[in-house]
Length: 302
Image 1 (cartoon, one colour):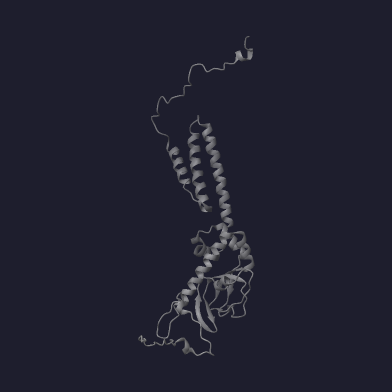
Image 2 (image 1 turned 90 degrees about the vertical axis):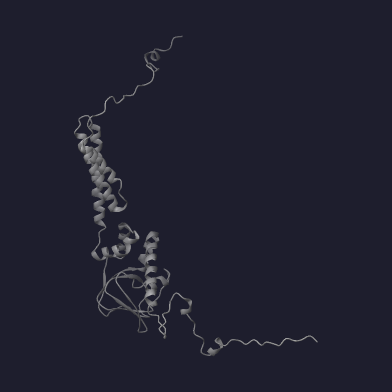
């Protein structure tokens, strides 16, 4: 029985043996032009970009330059239409990305006070401008002022309902009229009070904070800040680090003033600095009296 006609019309075998691939018969005498090498240099530099807004701006800027030079190089050769089309399309995409990143970067610019606060406190911790923008939005972008000799908080009266950072000026901290320490710019005004309370607790200041000159500060309300912490755990960790570091600095400033009567400087970190006074009804010499142990003479056996 003969095979069908349609099988006879099609050749299902490979004639001629293995497929022969074209071989470079002759190398070019001259290398590619400078635009070709410049394009690849720009591409190498572009792929070294980092993360964040500035990293993305760096990346797409060099990629756009690289693809633009590649487009010019491909345009000079009439046989490289596809290469020109792809290079120019990639150049256009990178240019659009540059415009998009620059627009987003323009939206996260801040006033001078907030920009200085970011540079001094948040930037060195690696906080991105996106996260810092959420922190600024939580404070409503308002800069508060304290006039000279006015109080930020009064002992036993002012409620603890916010967290504040001093931006300029100097604030004196006292308790019962006794000077404790000064608060300088880019330090928290109420870090010990903030750290001493849980989110659902309420309290009042146990110290008085009085401005020694005209001061500026930024503050965050407790409820709004805790809502931000609940949504972004990274921001909560950053604030916890900043607050506890500020408390440690204040303790060390108090340590410099802890001097005994004989000129001996106490260390607040040592447990010997903390003591509990004895009750007045009990004599104090009982704590200094060493109980005597009666020693009986040895008895000789009968």
